[in-house]
Image (cartoon, rainbow, N blue to C red; front, side, top):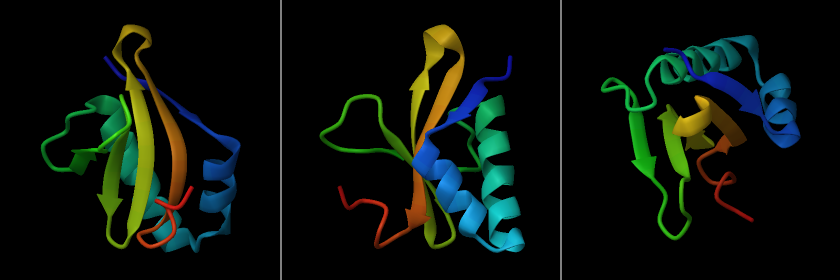
Length: 88
């Protein structure tokens, strides 16, 4: 039961700008996330103050995403470095 992954335009733009090693590492983690949104090997935390919003830590990068269990969908909202991703 894999979840479908969809990316916001900003998330795609961010991932295209990354070097291939970083990009592949983040995409590998997102792939693991699609197999199980509560994957025990991933560093996932619920974000405070926003319903249904989580962050995935991949080295110094963060992937902000939402999970819709009824649709088997993971929506990747934003990808960026630790310092920048939480702004706005």
